[in-house]
Amino acid sequence: MTWNHRLVRFKSPEGGYRYEFKEVYYHDDGTPMAYGDPFLWGDTIAEMQELADQLAVAAAKPSVYEEDFGESYDA
Image (cartoon, rainbow, N blue to C red; front, side, top):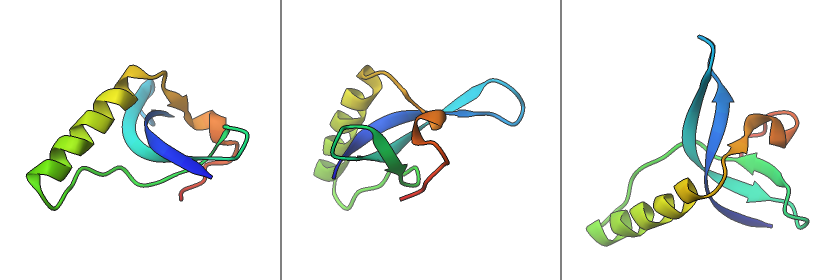
């Protein structure tokens, strides 16, 4: 199993969509299987900078859609 930070698109109850940065976990074949709660925290400034760098990488990738997980699974 692998994971990375990704933007996940969800349908909004008001219509349209919303996006959340999440940890996304993958099956061995690379398909998404679970995601964690949204987060933005760190214990040090260095950790926050590392997170900011990881989020920049995630924002540059295509969004993962809620439907990609089949039934919604939280990690």
